[in-house]
Image (cartoon, rainbow, N blue to C red):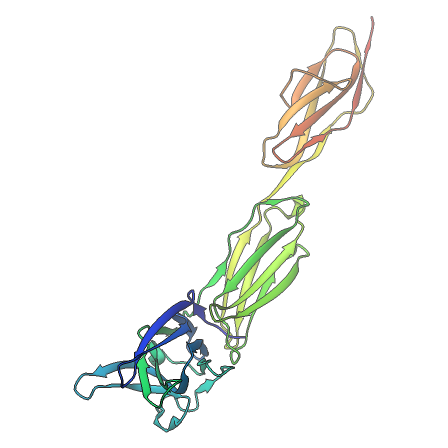
Length: 330
């Protein structure tokens, strides 16, 4: 795997003019920004669109135009033909990895901070109908940033969680390079299923890991970590504490049934709830399956009947056990 950050692809249209001042139209797709770690590698994605023949393309590092000599000067990173002008600082570190006639993608290995800067593409070619040559430097720049920090690990927005409903957590980094190994894993104890997704599109090169699981109420407040491990031993992580919504659990009336009381006396019953999220559920009492006008967890009763309570939150309601009260006449 590899590591880098890309911004959305830019569709650029360049207008070229040949010696006859006739316009030649071409376009280039490339990322605006790439971020990578020192010692890693970076893919500079690039594709040329033209109906004319490309005889050579050249990648430049921090090029400048010499108005006197009327030429571009700068460090040559790569040439598709006649690579003898390539800078020694990039020698043996740059590979062409493009596929197809108009793909101008290159890969730079063993990155250093000195590689940070602007990269531009120089095009040379021949008109489709004619022998005139044309050449042009891309107006846009691909900015490469190399640092210890590198691309950032991202924990995507955490979805709302409810017991017994499947949920997926997503963690990613805008980086992928074939010559730099790294792993994204989850440190978790929720019996989740992990899935790794690697994108190598022109518009995006990224590594993503997804964790899918069905939470129970016992998973609430558990800690789950997305861990990035790089080939140089460096680690990074993002942590989340689960907030699982669930119905009231273990709703009980703690009393032995049946309960016998003498006429004129009362008995206090308590409706206990072990746990609830959201907390503080609403308590409702029932006598012979008929709702009573009571919302407290402790209530006094002086009539015969079958009693139970119900605890309800925004997720669901849970009933308790039933207790029978018998009133003995004097």
